[in-house]
Amino acid sequence: MYIPKVERLLVNYKTLEEFKKFKGCGAQELSMLEDLQENIIEDNSESPFYGIYYGGSLVARMSLYVTKPYEYSIPKQEYLELFKLEVLPTFQKKGFGRSLVDYAKSLNMPIKTTARVNSEEFWQKQGFQKTTNHEGTVYLWYPETKVNTVSNGESA
Figure 1 (cartoon, rainbow, N blue to C red):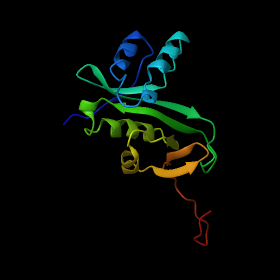
Figure 2 (tube, rainbow, N blue to C red; figure 1 turned 120 degrees about the horizontal axis):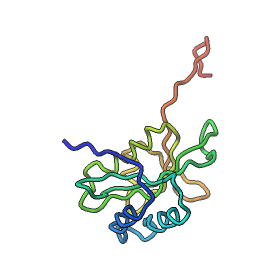
Figure 3 (cartoon, one colour; figure 1 turned 135 degrees about the vertical axis):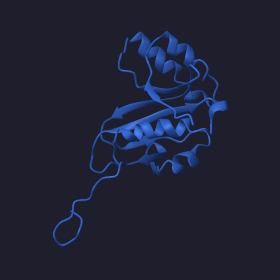
């Protein structure tokens, strides 16, 4: 059984060529090509891009940004914005998207994302909760935290 390996993508022209395969995959706003080009121009070595290669080709990708405390996070803390998760059509429903989400979850920070192109069911299966705020509908996931208890058995 193949277990997808998530890796941080390099900001270079090879990755730019790989991203071109995703152009037109889904809605126009899902393309990270412009984001990558900006990072190449800025020579940003801290890539926010993560992906999965299969057979030497990039088949799934996402971007993760650490963002300032989110209004719904309790306690108020930094959170990850999982942005533009995409899997090439022939690789969908094979666990690649789930592997990217699991990687983000492994960073043990709250995660916020926006469901796009009929992906609401996917996010709910990944344990994200649907909520509405000033941005519209977003999906939130929180790492499990241990609840401190006081001597009378109530949560602290």
